Length: 130
Image (cartoon, rainbow, N blue to C red; front, side, top):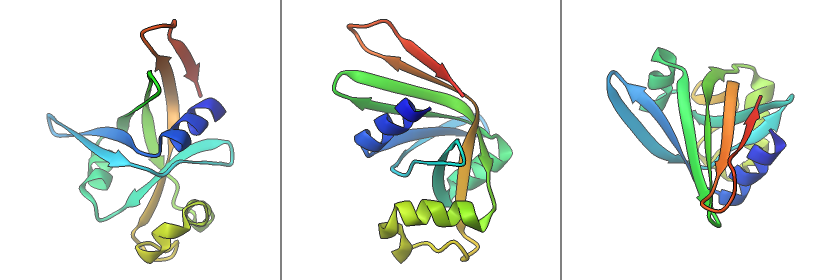
């Protein structure tokens, strides 16, 4: 999981895919955190992505850097504890102009049953499960 975290941190912007009915939805994201040995991302509860994940928690992240790409699949589970929201916002203080751990909007989610695959054109794929 640490390798996945470091890759996503280094990339900066990754792409999160969800579904809305039968329509795939993809958007850029930039938050990632290891908290209590789980990999977290952050969004706002008022955003369509939050509603999509409530209806279907299966999601996939794709990121690319230096000829290597990562696909991370799994279920995203909300952690509604203030401690988890605060940890994310403390890691990304620039978000505090839009979010607060007590605002009722900040949402943090962690990956469950995750499979991460690192691929490139020059090496065998590497798979990590957590």
